[in-house]
Image (tube, rainbow over all chains, first blue to last red; front, side):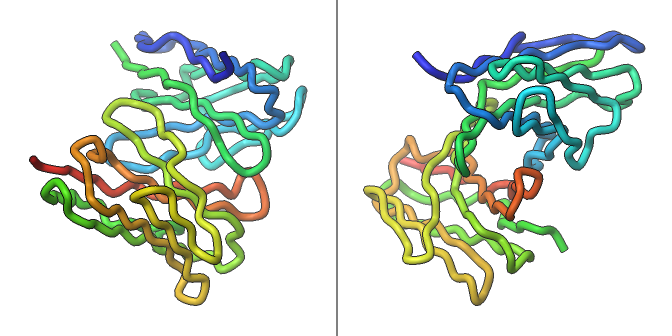
Length: 110
Length: 110
C-alpha cells in the first residue's frame, strides 16, 4: 500500500559524526520536505524539493544536507556542523497542496 | 509576532463537550489553510482543509475568516479518542511558505 517510510525510527549520533535519515515515498508525489520538531514547538522546514535533482533551503538548513536523485527518495544528512541535532525529524511529500507525513525519526546525541 | 499563532492549551474537557480552537495568521496573502492532528510521539495527520465557505466533516467544523485572519476548528460531542495536539497550517504561494502553528493540546476526560 502507498505511503511514506522513514528509517530508522531511532538514531543515535556521536559527537562529530554525520548521520543520514532515510525517506522513501511511493505516492508518486513530486514534492518532498524535511521538517524538524522540537518539544512544544511547531514544525520548522529544513529543506524541500519540488522536482528530482533540485532542492531548496528552508528556514533552518544550516548543518544539514540533502539529495534528490530519485523521485521516491529524499535522504537527509545531519552533519557535525549541526550543534543541536536532538529532535524529531519528519519527512513529508505532497501532490498539490496537501502534505502527507512519514512516521518520523528521533535523533539523539550520545 | 509569530506568523501563525495558536493557544497552546491544554484544553481539558469532559467527554461529550463541544470545544473550539482558534488560530491566527499574520500574512494576508496566505492561500490555503489546514488542520492537522498529531498524537503523542507520532506524525501529523491531515484532519481537514479549511475552505472560505467553511466546511464540516462529521463532528468537526472548520471556518476561515480572511478579514480577521483566523481559522477555527470546532469539535462537537467530543470523544476520548479526540485527545491529541491540533496543528494549524497556513500555506502561501510557494512550497517554502508552509507555516505550522505550535499546536493546541486537547485532553478529553471520561
